[in-house]
Length: 208
Ligand SMILES: [Zn+2]
Ligand SMILES: [Zn+2]
Image (cartoon, rainbow, N blue to C red; front, side):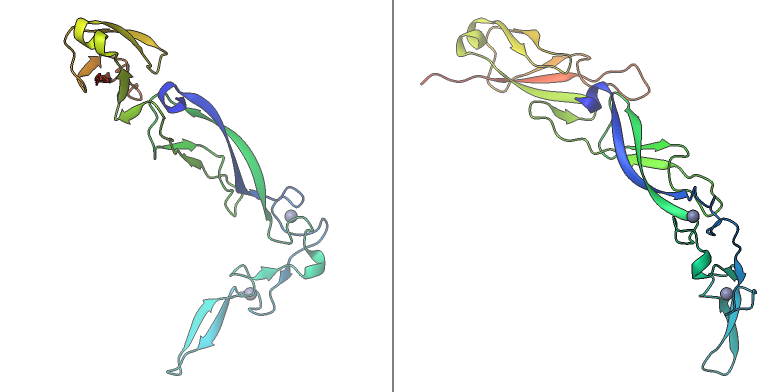
């Protein structure tokens, strides 16, 4: 029903955020990064390969930065990484007519990159099936119990719809599994005023 009518949902998630204690520097206040001893500040190391050639690879001790933070100078909050994982809550507007698998992008609510710039949060919707309504694109199928006498003589039955129960005319001589189309009682197509139909399937119990 939330997907049919639209809703606001909160999502709880973890995102990488710039460490507030050190502003992403990774150092304790007043402390500095040291030159990486493994690469002497160049960020690369040369490696012998089997053929006798040497090749340059990114320094594995400093990740190519050329500097490192000695353990005693590391920011205690982030352990020197400059980033922390944060639990966040964001409210997401689900549009009426939302479909299973649909993605909603929320700008700047994702992981921070190494420069501290925020990425986007992408929420993928899982729409759970409904007990009464069966969806097919923007159309909705629903079964209605029609008493035997009503099917023969005609009359009306109350049927559920996504807008609530509605009265539906049953023509005289209606057959079991006959379908009736209720125009524009289905789901909205996102971004349009178009609504699909509700298709009612008559279930007529036959007397023994
Ligand atoms: Zn290094
Ligand atoms: Zn920190």
